[in-house]
Length: 111
Image (cartoon, rainbow, N blue to C red; front, side, top):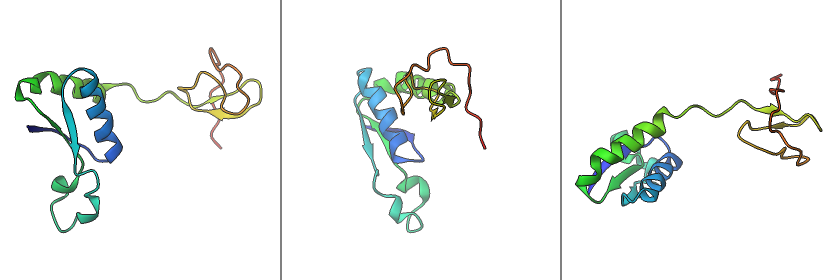
């Protein structure tokens, strides 16, 4: 086994590990609850880590991680044309009324 990724947050480690597992690269998350010992040990030791089982998967895993890190940031929030509520830009339907947000050119206005 080898450490392939050190995450800042537990959920980042799980997202990477899940993606690797989906692609057939056996991955595990370690140190997911170790953040409370930062200060007693170096931060990189206590941060969540993703380990892969086989070293022969290292190059492929590194490419997957690079693709994840290079992904575009989340879309801007959208304002529902039907009710005016703000929904995340990745939603297809308004969280409040269920109306379609597809093709909505109304970005949410931050106050």
